[in-house]
Image (cartoon, rainbow, N blue to C red; front, side):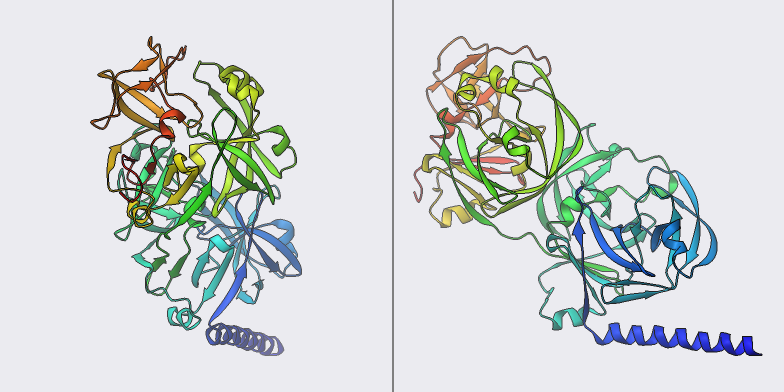
Amino acid sequence: MRKTKKIFYCTVLMLAVLIVGTLYFVSNSWVLIPFTYDQEGFPRIEVQVGDLSCSLLLDLGSRFPLFLDQTTIQSTLHQYQGPIQWNEMNGETKEAPSYTIPEIKIGQLSISRPTAIEIPEDQPSLLGSVLDKNLLLDFPHARILACSRLFKLCQEGRTLAKWIKVPYTNLPLGIAIQVDTTFGIKTLVLSTSVNVSGLKSSCLPGSKPSLSTCTIGEREFESMIFHPIPFPDKESLSDVDGFLALDFLKNHPMYVDVHEKMIYIQPPTEYFTRIPVTFNLAHFPVVDVQVEGAIYPMIVDLGGEWVQLSQRVLRDLRKTSVGVKTWEDYFGNPYVSPLYKISGMAIQDLFLIEVETTPLSEEFLDATSSSYFCHRPLGLIGCSLLERYNLLLDFPHQAIYACKEVSSLQQKGLLSSHLLVIPFDTYGTRILLSVEVDSKPVHLLLDTGFTNTTLFDFFSSKARSFCIGGHDFGEQPIASAQTHSLTRREDGYLGMDFLCKYPLFIDYQKKQIVIDLGPPGD
C-alpha cells in the first residue's frame, strides 16, 4: 500500500513539473540558447546533465535526443530502455544501449526524461532531436531561439513576412527541403555535422566539387559549391540527394515551424562594399585583410584557388591541421603543402568564415616570377575565398566593389551603359574565358597574379587582334611562357595589363563577366 502511494505521489509530482515547465515555455515568447563554434567550425551547446556541465555537438540530423558516454549517463538517475539500432550515413547499421535520464537543462530550457544512447568515451557527445520545438536557427550570430509559436516571435519584433517559406519533411537523416540546383531539383537535408554542402556523386558531372545555382522557394540564392558524397546504395537513403550544410546555414538564419512543418529562410541580403586597392612593385593588387584582430596587406590572386599565408602571419594564428594539399604552378612544378583551417578573415565588410590555408611556398615564389621574388607578400587571396560575392574589379580607380547586381553599380555611376557581357567557364573555382588572339581561339584564365597577359608558346610580343565576346580590343601586348603540364585547360592568362584598362564585373551567380567599354556614367 505504501509503495502504491509512493508511486502515485511521484507520478503526480512528475506531471506537475512537466505542466509547470510547459506553461513556463508557452508563457514566455522565446528562450535563448547561445552556442559556440569549436576549432573545426561545428556548433557546441552547453548542456546540464545531472550535476555535469557538458559541451555537446549540435546534430540537427539526429533522430535521437542524446548521445552520451557511459560516465555521463551513470552520473544521473538513469533507467535502462534496451538496445536501439540506427543506420549511419554510410549505410552501416549500429546498435547501442539506450537509457532514460531524468532531465537536461539548456540555458533556461528544461527537457524532461530524454532518451540517451550510450557511445564510446572517444566519440563526441551529441545533442539531437531533443530540440523538437519551433526554432530560430541564427547560426550567423551563434544562437538559437526556442519559440512556442510563430506569432510570439513576431511579437518580439522578429517579423518573417519577407522570409522565404518552404515546406519540409522529416527523413531518417533529418529535416529535408527541396533545392533547385544546376543539376536539377534535389532533396537536401539540413546538417550541422558537415561543414560543406554536398550531393551524391551520381548527381554531379565529375568527381570534383562543382559550382551550382541555388534556388529555394523560387528565390535565387548565391551560387554554391557542392562536394561529391559517396552515398551507399541503400533504400533508406534513396529519398536523400545530399546535404545543405554549415556553409549555407552560417550565412542564412532560418525559422523551423514544427507545427506547420514549414521553414522560413532569410533571403539573400543585398550587399555593397568598397575595398581600396593599392599596387605593389610588381603591380599586383593588394588589399588589407584582417585576421584575428591584426591587419595584413595581401595580394588578390584570382589565378589561385585558395589562401596562402606567409610563415610570419601563419605562425601566431590559431589553426587546425586538416591534411595536405597537392598542386602545381603553371610550369608544371609539383608542390605539397600542409593544409590548415583558421576561424576566419575579414576584408572591409566581407566576413569570411572557416578559411582553409597553406603556408606560402618560397619555392613557388622563386619559380614563378622575379616580380614575386622582389616583393615577398604576406599572403595570397585566391578566388575560392571571394567567389561567394560578385565583384567589380575597378583597378583603373584602385578599388574592388562587392555588389550583387550591375544595376546597383550603374546607379552609383560606377559602370556605364556600354557593357560587354561574356559567359565564362570555371576551372576549379577559377574563371576561364574564351578569347580569339589573331583569330586563333584560346582559353585564358583571369589572373590578377600575372602582370602581363600571357600565352604559352606565343612567338610574338603583340597580338594585332584581341577579341572577347565578339568585341575586338585591338592590339594587345602578349608575353610568352612555356609549360610542361599536360593537364591544363588554359592556354594562358588574362593579366593586370588588360584588367587595369577596363573595369570588369564578375557575376558568379550567373557565371558571366561584364566588361565596361565606356567611361563611368556614360
